[in-house]
Image (cartoon, rainbow, N blue to C red):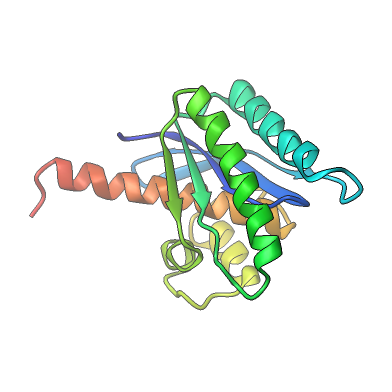
Length: 169
């Protein structure tokens, strides 16, 4: 219930951002981040399988206690949204196989948790990760940086759950 090592995921099919953030109390440390790339020349099933295999590998290597996903925002392009939903399912399967709880956070929830503003842009989120939350080596790429933000959001939510569980008024 109170996870301390979270793998954050910015799901996609062409690119999946992954990041492992560890923390407790008020501090957090970026352990690892990366981006999984799949080729548009490959069949959809192969691409989704690659995403699942990469997630399994990240879980085996970094031993997180939970998985935090950015929830799919349904926009105008339903074809790409369906592909992202498939990749999200593969990520959830890898987490379930490892016995890990999965939490999902909407894009605005992540922005608010990291910057305090629901309308923050990607550069503001990245700067807040480094300057406000003190994370070192925040990746330049948007996908990996978003995954860091999702993981940090989950850790912050865990701090709130601990606070409430302790009977705080």
